Image (tube, rainbow, N blue to C red):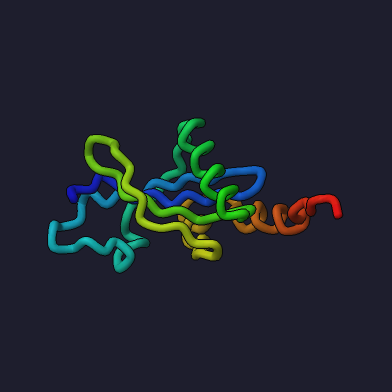
Length: 118
């Protein structure tokens, strides 16, 4: 696939962080951007409300309070789901964008997940 970018979406109970990683400069024979992570432009992007709602519905179906989603985005803007992790790497995004993901994760953990009534 001819990607425009990859997106890492950190979906926490009360916030979502969407980071676009520009992979358009990679050669066709270099499909794994992770070897060059720090040399690729990263930027935070707004996420379409319906798309975020569907991500949260996915997490709810799995009874998960949070998840880390990876998507490849084609040049025409079509997102392609790659994977969802329950515990993924995120610190590099914080360092490259300055967004305080670690503080948001700490806040989510401190709030806890509401338990259903017994």
